[in-house]
Image (cartoon, rainbow, N blue to C red; front, side, top):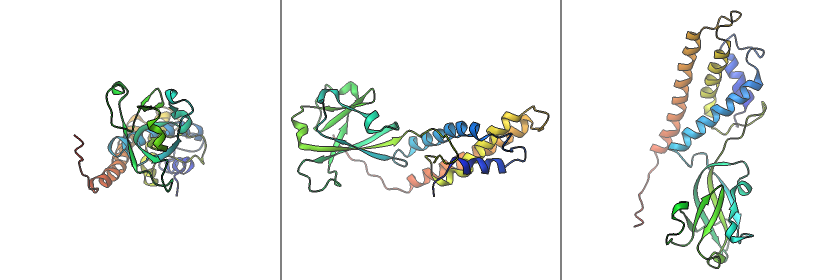
Length: 227
């Protein structure tokens, strides 16, 4: 099941009687959810980079080798982090296999001697390092990246977070809505009341992130010495 903006807004309104559709408008909630879901994605990415990762394919050879490949074209929705790159050989039996690890090199070290194959990124463009003739050995590249969350525009917008983020997002949104009503005598929402919901929102956010981090703690890691 996918978590939609409309579901989160309805749950947020259920949390306090002052949050009617008139007092907690959906269009305002969309923009708030864009920020809140982006915050959760960023927090997850810091600790578990691959948790929300997706892949994109770059066909080789490039149209102009020296111009590189625009990531705005390959990843049209935008990206937060490029995790890894693998290559498919031109003599590969299957395009579903990506056996060649491609090294990600900082732009500042592009002129240093690098093990082939290697790539670097600058200004949202992927550049292939080394001689163009060497890259004839590869037919395509698979990029693994963390996507940038899309803007929330309607009730049916799907949020780029796991379903169990519902309580965290709904409570955060409830707190946001209540702060908009503080000091309005018609609704009698006080700053203390809004602060109370701030605390609840932080607890739910922490609980959600802890669940993600526990997933990583149960995984086994090995350190590979490449020196």
